[in-house]
Image (cartoon, rainbow, N blue to C red; front, side, top):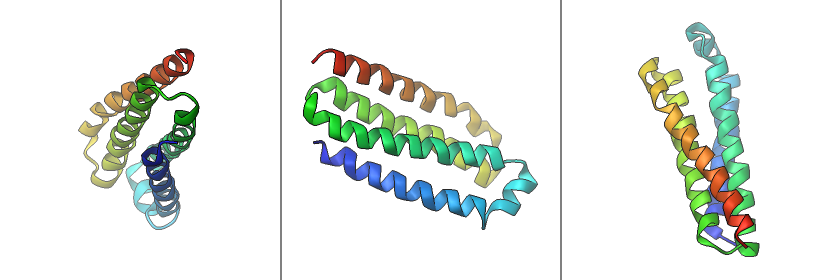
Length: 123
């Protein structure tokens, strides 16, 4: 198993729960005032997706030990950080230009899925 991906999955998952709770409670009035509740929820949801897929990749890396599985994990990590991070940044700063960064993270997530497919197929 790839211990690094498992550890990162645990960190992302824990932070996802904490940020989701923060957004649903303490930060909710501010998010509502900015009209960013959905944006924050999307960021937290995709962060949790990233945590789950990294957990799965950490486990799959033992059964499918090849470079594409590893590349997939890094693509998911980078994509999750960029995608969710840009959305969190919009919510916290109100600077909407960060929305232009989100598609870069989304593209990395797509690359992660393609690499995962090819890595499993190549075994």
